[in-house]
Structure formats: structure tokens, C-alpha cells
Image 1: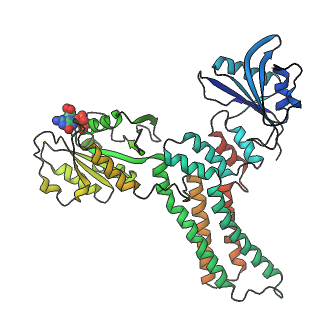
Image 2: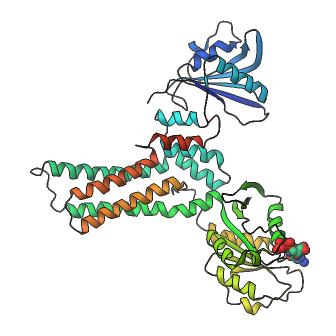
Image 3: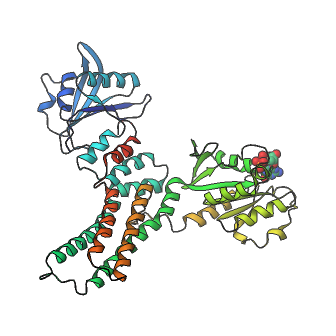
Length: 459
Ligand code: GDP
């Protein structure tokens, strides 16, 4: 599909900064900017310059000089979008950028929708869909893992794996079709072995990719962590301690469910997403108030539960009940207030694995290193691999992989039940098309719209 409109947007972030870029892309990009650009060299016109060159001059609105700029010209197909692209490198004031953008629009460009540059890169075949999605992930990366995995996806890591599997499947679809068309020359004798081998190989490959999803999500989004404990155990103090770490980067984001606050904590490469479902910052008696059922529900959503016990008091029924609940999950018990006389009866919790119980003092910051180390052991040991391991971190990709896996299993069943070969084709085709969704082959327009609408302006 060829898109001919020329689009423009401010591609750098909103707010004043050193420089800011207005990006223009489309058939008329050069012509439009030529109308408002006055080169320092008399008579120089952008339409005559070579691709990938930089030009110094002014953006002018009639007689008025708006800004002193550098203009970069990139001719198609060698640009991000695959179209003629001009980037106007302005001073980074929002007012200047806005005025330059308005002028570009006045001269014939259209304001770009969020993600429209990347969408064009996709439609022009510069990127496939999984790579285009990776662009957004690269921009939003909040830790080293997220960055490295989205970079690998951008370079085509995921696409390559998907294409390998698809090419195996399409070979077999074609083979079956030709054999059925021309039985005299192409024999299907012994074919069940061959296709079984292909199915085994590729279901294993898909399974491996699917298995990376949980790790991938944890690495990318942070470990979904819930802090539980009775009132006054020290939950808020722990959270404040974590948030107050000098090395911590903290962002507040609204969670998906109402009333849920999620806080991302990122320190020393360790990334936690604290789910404050229980309202731990509230001083009320949350554990009792939310009840055991709710605690169970919360625990089920979490990758990690940190249970805070007030060590200066006796461990009671309530603690034991909760501990019982979380026993099968990944958990850490913090025996807090260890700076005071500890009266908690350790016999009650002695059957818990020793490494999961940490003596702690939120007041003095004692035990923080141990806590960090334990979390790292639980979630990161051997997990962060910056080698060729491909991670699936996108839920859309996961769903397509699962569907194609199911379709291949159906083919397996048909082979085992010795069904006629034309039965295989339908499920093989399903698997092939599902995988195609990941890289953007045969996707519906509205899915494309939906994916790109989540992009930021100017990308
Ligand atoms: P929450 O209700 O579980 O969130 O508990 P808070 O964090 O609000 O703490 C309750 C009380 O215990 C506060 O007065 C804290 O100052 C105190 N506290 C918390 N952690 C410690 C600790 O490690 N040692 C001591 N001595 N007091 C603590």
C-alpha cells in the first residue's frame, strides 16, 4: 500500500530542551520544507541536495525568521519510514517547535497521528509488525533487560524464529497439496513419519518461546510483588525504605484495576512492581479487613509475596493462617523490628525454609542487602541472559503462539488417528496464519490501527 500524504510532528519530547526535532515524511516532504527554509548559502534548494546531508539555515514565515536550524534530508527508501523524510533540528523550545510545526502544516503537511511514522515504516516494509512493536518497547524500556530484549526484537530476533517455523509449515502445506493434485508423481507413502518429525520439532520450538514469556514479563515489567502483614508490622516502613533508597528510581502509575496503585522500584538492576492492592500505606487493619479470601486472591496474582511479621510481638493465628496461604508461592518472610527484643515465637515458623526468613529492621535498614540478594536468587539467577536467547514479552505474540501450538497439536492428533492428509492442511494453515499475525502478515487493518494508536506522538 502506498501512502502519499505528507505528515509532520514534533518528534522530541514535550517541554523545553536543548534541541527539538520536527519530522516531516512523505512525497512532498522536501518540497514543503523548501518553501520555508532559507539556506545560509544563497540559492541552495533542498530538492537539489543529496540524500543524508545536513543543511544550515533559517525557517522563515514570509519575512519573519522563526528559528535557526539544521535540516537533515533523507530520500526514500533510505529513511525510517521508507519515504522522503526531512528532519528540522530546531532550538528546543515548545513555542518554537509548535510554530515550526504549524508552518509546515500550513504549507501542505498533515499532522501525524501517534505512531504514524512507524506505521508507515511497517506499511512500506521497512519493519515487520513485531519489529514495529519493539520500537515502542525500546522507548518505554525501564531496565537493562527490557532494553536488551526489545532491541533484539527490533533487530528481528523474534521475526526470524517465527519465519523459520512458518517456512517449515508452508513447505508441508504445499507438499500435501501437490501430492493430492498429482498422486502419480508425488507419493505420500511414509509421509506421516516426516510430518510427525516436523510437528515435534516445531511444537518444541514454540513451547520454548512460550516458556520465555513469564521470565520475559518479569524482566520487562518487574517482579509483581505484594507486601502483606498485620497492622503495625512495618509494611509502610519497608515500602518507604525501598522507595527511599538513594539509588531507587520510582515511578507511580495507575494500575489496571481501580484502587490499585502500582509502584515501580528499580535498584541495582532489580526491578519490582509493588502492587499496593492491600492499601499498605493505609494504617487501617488491612489484612483483617481484606480478609483471607482477598489475601489469597492477591497472593495468586503476585510473583512474590513479602510477608512482614512484627518480631516484637507474638506470632498469632492470623499470621499462621496467612503463612499457610502463601506457602506454595514464592515468598519471603521478614521478621521485622529485630532492633527490639524479639518475642515472636520462632518455633511457629521453623518449618519454613531458612533462606526464606530474614531478620529485618525497617527502622535501621537492616537486612535490606539480604532481601535484595534473596530476590535476586529467586528471580534472576541465570535468567538475565544477554546472549541470543529470544524472549517473548508481548501478550499479543504469546496468544498467537499458543493458538498456533494448539493447531499443530490438532495436526498431530490427525496424524495419529491416521486421518487422510487433506485434514492436516486446515490446521497447518491455521498455525501458519496465527504465526503470521506476529510479524504482521495478513493482519486486519483495525488491529494495525489499534497497535499503532498506542504509540507516542512523533514516532
Ligand atoms: P504497617 O501498619 O504494617 O504499615 O506498619 P508501619 O510501617 O506503619 O509501622 C508501624 C510502627 O512500627 C511505626 O511506629 C514504625 O515506626 C514502627 N516500626 C516499623 N519498623 C520498625 C523496626 O524495624 N523497628 C522498630 N523499632 N520500629 C519499627
